[in-house]
Structure formats: C-alpha cells, structure tokens
Length: 185
Image (cartoon, rainbow, N blue to C red; front, side):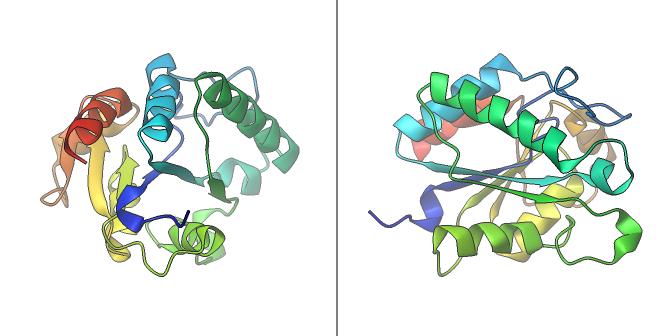
C-alpha cells in the first residue's frame, strides 16, 4: 500500500526519541531512549502512520564517534521500537559539521528529501516534522511539513526563544503529540 504524505511522521532523534546531551551522544551507553517515545512510535505505527527519522550527527564529522557506533545506536533504537510493535521506515542522518557546506544538515531539507526518495513519495507536503529545535522545524517547513515542537531535549529552550515558531504546534513530548495525532489525524 502506498504511503501518504499526510500519514508520514518525521522525527528528529536526540531530544525527541532519546535523551540529548550538549556534549553529544557519543556511545551506545550514552544513548538512552525516552520509554514514552518508544511507546509512541509503536502507537503511531499501529495507527497506520509511517515513521522516519532525520538526524544531524555532526559528532561523526567531529571525530567523537564513528558510523559503526551510530549504527549500533540505531540498531538498539529499532529493536526497542520493534518490541513496542512499531517500525521505523527510514533513518536519514547527516555526519557533517556545519562548515562542511553539505546539503543534508538541518535546517536544510536534504535529510527530508532523502526520506521522500527512500519512501517513494511525490511530496512531503502535509507530513509532520517533530523536533526540539528551530532547525528541525525549518527543515520541515522548507518541504511543506507541518511543524511540531516538543519540549523535551532542547525544546523548552527553543520555546523560550520563541523565534520562528509561529506555525508550530507545541507539545510536552512525543507521546502527547502522538495521542493528539491519533485522535485528530
């Protein structure tokens, strides 16, 4: 069955699905999921939504960890989600540092365009972009996503700054958004 853009939820990773760190999540031991977010991904999947992840991972470009470590984190994430009867359709990540002048690092929409291509969608117009930073929302808005800011991770700080959030719906966390979306989507 083809995926509908309106049934696609794109998630930032650090601060939305797992605890974030100002010093980077550099190892499998430092990657700690929010149990409510894992359950929410399961709930989204069971409700017929497609879930994908778009995550900046400049710690790779900075030499803090390698792609094998990132893969181990994502394997753990996918196992937890599978245990919650959920599925992640695609994980797109940017390994670059800001000065690399890449096209994938959020706030640019490259990661979202990768997801669009991987899932065979004609458009991302009407899909959901859930993040804890302004750059997450800007990447989504660049391709027509509906913006959702969660207060977990850096979300509360982003909300307090308030700039660029006029189009965003704000929720306490991914679970609260998921409850709302499953009732209203």
